[in-house]
Length: 144
Image (cartoon, rainbow, N blue to C red; front, top):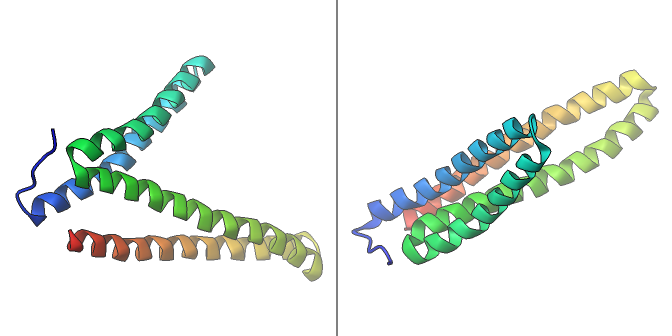
């Protein structure tokens, strides 16, 4: 049964609960998979499969019951996916630049300097992405 929202505040609460709940559920599930993997690989595989099913099923169920919570879950998934793409591209570029720069500067010391610099820049990119995502999510939340 579809939930009827009383006002914008209730929509925002559902949105943020869906957003934060997705991260909390996945962090707890990954921790459980890690703990189970210490004892049984097949148990960890089963929990991982359950996690995939939950990540597909929960937004579908929420779409029919609590629409804005489903939107929060989907935006959490999308924001983490976008971060993965941005950091993946940056990491790949930094591998090639660090290696080539290390050879150009003069061996391992030059490569370590450039590699360390790229790690710092990667962390700054991550912080910039998080800040940008915050403002975008705040704008979406205010428009609900």
